[in-house]
Length: 326
Image (cartoon, rainbow, N blue to C red; front, side, top):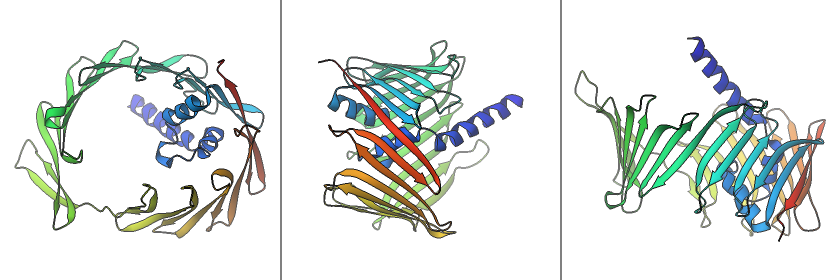
């Protein structure tokens, strides 16, 4: 029981901390004009590093290093140190010749190794091992001729704990998913279209009775423009956000809504020459609070400084770069 409490406490603190940590790095990525759902991925930073021959990026908050990110000559992130994180503040990454991650290691602020993973790529198969001990945790098999992915999870004694089979259409849309545990099928999902509407059958296979089928309509009301930008996002039939873009395909306005409080936040983005982000404003209607970010660049176009004003509080983010020798 105590172990369970510790795990829950750790997970809560980690997820809560993530929401307030690493802001200088997140603000930096904001200037790269990438979708919000991938802004925390290493790939976004790698693309910028490769394009600009970058070896190191330092993100500084009020004179103190918040994030230190180091890259290899292919732009891959090889170390990431997040001093805002008091649980896991350093991560290391290794890659194969094809640029695929083959090993990750994560450390606590005092330098202790906490956990890590190794990845092995075989023909149509990916194996995941957990460290310490290089214990096999997962195997994914890609069966191209059947449009299937089979994922198998393993326990500490290398016994199979669960299995998942995903079956796709020729257009790579998921049409069926099966979930197994204890060597038996216990749940299945079937996706289909009927009378122009999308549906999902969720089928349960209890040990003690006949299968149970629950049919649900899949709401897919999100609207995208020709550039795949999200115009309107929905949760079911409720509109949660709407967005506008300029002629250079840059986000200029976002409005957010909730069922309880209605229109609760507005974000406005301002650009130089329609492409270079110079100001972001956040207006919280319910509290009357405003947050402003002002962006400043150096003579080669790299982000140099951001002034953040949050009510009466002010912070300064600075950015320093080290390039690879040519």
